[in-house]
Length: 312
Image 1 (cartoon, one colour):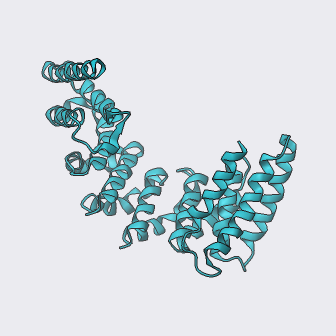
Image 2 (cartoon, helix red, strand yellow):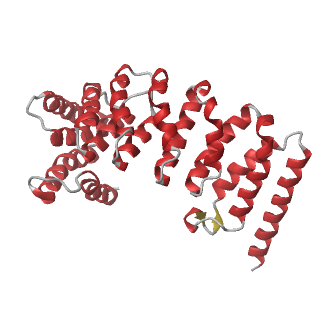
Image 3 (tube, rainbow, N blue to C red):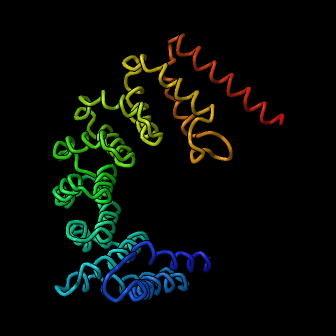
């Protein structure tokens, strides 16, 4: 266990403290390692729950004083936020830091915003009152020309976002479905999937755009759209019978090894994607002979291929 802790502590500074001005990367790395590292090592060395509680309460008291001080810089706030995340992960209340996580997402540079958004997504839930304070920041970042800011905003929207504020960001996310970068299109689809889960009536008018995502040239965007289709087909399979041929074609491409090798798992072409498609076809094939025949042909073809590989 100690080896794992040491490797984690070695990697964390590189994750959170890349390209930091002032004092150089080495100084920032040392500062980060000494504070977070001493906390983690101190906890792992303890022998009782009582000792852990005492140490964490001391750490939280120190962090509360630091984040409340007017002299605390955004860089210091970022480091405090990582330690607060760690304390909350252990089950201790760090609610005094929630508002500071939102402020960090609003005011910081890219790396500080990244930590701020991460903290918000871990600290808050969809109904939390403080989440409303983040809406303007999300809208601003969705309109940014910086791809990293757009990605961060889409990520937090797909994780937690107040239902009543969906109309404020929905047009911006719809526009991202046409973005030139596939990662933006993929995250936009996932955000819309989240909206469909919590407020399906608000995204019904863009179902035609879901069909475009299904035919996207990027495999990741297409795969993300399957989550939405599986949900919608569960609710009303008859409205999507015309897409049976499209799902079968995608499945044939997957089984035929047409996808990038990054999607393979132990030489099996995109197994989770195959499962998703089979579940969709299973719903579409219920009480539908044509869809059932197409699915059966696929299953026979796949079984033959598996048998051939085993014989080899």
